[in-house]
Image (tube, rainbow, N blue to C red; front, side):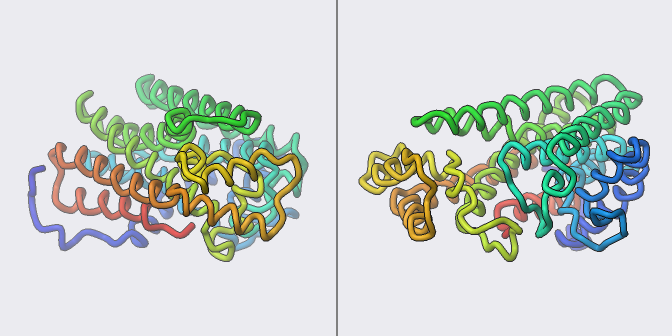
Length: 342
């Protein structure tokens, strides 16, 4: 990595995210405004802009981490962050398309400390709003060139493939760790990979640089999923906005859970018995299931993999010709992913 100057001017994570959201928000609102009124109302509710009746509110709309990566990677690649806004908006729309659908498929009733959109407006309208966000994403990105649209399309197809595998796992008693990792790579990592690559494309970087940014994002995305799965079991509901042990309640086969189930340990075998039961797990059984995942090594394994993937991603950055500030700020966001609490 070429160090051009001191990184003392590098911004902290909170400042980077606030800067990127300030860039993104007007463009995202303008995009959503193009939707039919009923779908616009649901989308705005989901983004936290207003309540179910359309009254403006200050509800949180998430960190918009993926769109932040788009504009920050564009800047790091020597481009104008504002020029990457269409790509950033498109990535944010795709991400929220997946969240709207995911909440319906998983039956989740809470997101970001609020009732999920489908519980307020109904399943059909929530699904249709997700569909509209997906279509809008490509309508915004296509005028920027086919290479970016192709990158995003590949990310969407991988995301859907990962979601399909996740649903399939719910019907299977046995899932290998390799299958689970491949599912997580598609479901989460590939969209984050596309976000980073799209930033480089917006900066008109060469193919090798675009590939390197994409590899950084892929490692980062898989680390993100490991942390997300850990929070799905041990996260503080007051911070995550999700019920305690939410992933265990639905008996999801997440990365730490599958690591435990396939560990060959007594704790893994006991956890398998709980997961094979037909009846819902009650409070004490949920506590026991969490203990078993930890005793079987699933928690430690996922934590170690998240750290290793962070290192892999930072190695990809180190191979790029970045300024010290750009490298420091991307490293700051990368580290936020593996230390976040929600």
